[in-house]
Amino acid sequence: MILVTGGAGYIGVVLVKELLKKGISVRIFDKLYFGEKPLEEFRDRIDLVQGDIRNFDRAILNDIDAVAHLAGLSNDPTAEFNPAANMEMNAKGTAELATVCKEKGIRKFTYASSCSIYDRGLFAEDLIQDENAPVQPRAAYAISKYKGERALLELADEDFYPVILRQGTVYGYSPRMRYDLVVNTFVKDALQKGKLTVFCGGEMWRPLIDITDAAGAHICCLEADETKIGGNIYNISYKNYRILEVAYRVKKALEDIVDVEIDVDYFERKTRSYRVSTKKIETELGFKPTVSIEDSARDMAHKIIDGNAADMENPLYYNINWMTLLVELEQTLKEIGTVF
Ligand SMILES: NC(=O)c1ccc[n+]([C@@H]2O[C@H](COP(=O)([O-])OP(=O)(O)OC[C@H]3O[C@@H](n4cnc5c(N)ncnc54)[C@H](O)[C@@H]3O)[C@@H](O)[C@H]2O)c1
Image (tube, rainbow, N blue to C red; front, side):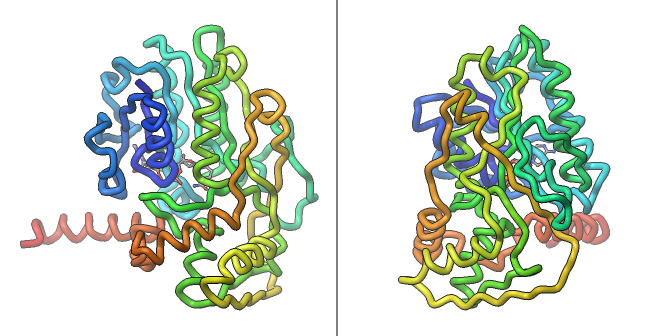
């Protein structure tokens, strides 16, 4: 059985679906910030444990053969909203989970890290960075992911084979939808407003990858020979794009559905920019993503038009809006007691 932490999240739900398709049994461990409705399609076929990675019961690892670790705060704004919780969840939680895995003889462990670790800003030297590039993460989120990576690498040996997947920004439809990721935001804006707004001339680079490909990278590593993956870092991305190009690709992909205007501003502001090489995972594990922005954007648009996650302004689809709302509700409930 595979334990997927964060299995009720945007990528986690798709990963769990893909594992079940392969006949692999799954346990999900998740705080369920976004509820368990996204799991309804396969709820009767999984073992679900609600809990916090900062304080987990070791029993979640009973009968587990391998772990895909995706749980944690998953973007800059939520990490900055509560930097202490971010560090405890993303760095310390990762280290503790991996330590217990090792003690229990669970040998394979995939980690959902992030290419944002490479970010040095839009005005830094423009390099295609591979896994050996020196990194100096700046933002709270990237620092916490990097610390999680370091903890795993320290534990790696002939008894424990963690692999770090530095994921590009993910795009595509998930039953637990996010509209706070660039391609998804563009598809939403195209359908809602017929207009995409691009900042800084859209000059910033991003490595991007479809959600089924991101899930596929975890599965590829879970299926690989442990000695091949152990202690390795892999970048995963379909391609690197400038954001302006992403906007034009989404516009073109949706041309049969909606007329889209692109509005570009050229004001300088602080923004992330980075591009990566994905040669290592392709050469060593034969992993090559296949789903383009265009195919994924069209699929997403059709699903939305069919009524899936069609209430696009719902705060549930924007991590920072949802966290802010939960904290406000938590405070209000403390003051007023139950609602009725
Ligand atoms: N989505 C992307 O573009 C992207 C890119 C690079 C890396 N990542 C990483 O991939 C992973 C999954 O991202 P996602 O987009 O699915 O995010 P998400 O926010 O949709 O899902 C995260 C899941 O983790 C759970 N979770 C959060 N804190 C937890 C805690 N303390 N204990 C237990 N569960 C907790 C949440 O309830 C949620 O279900 C994250 O680790 C993220 O940092 C995501």
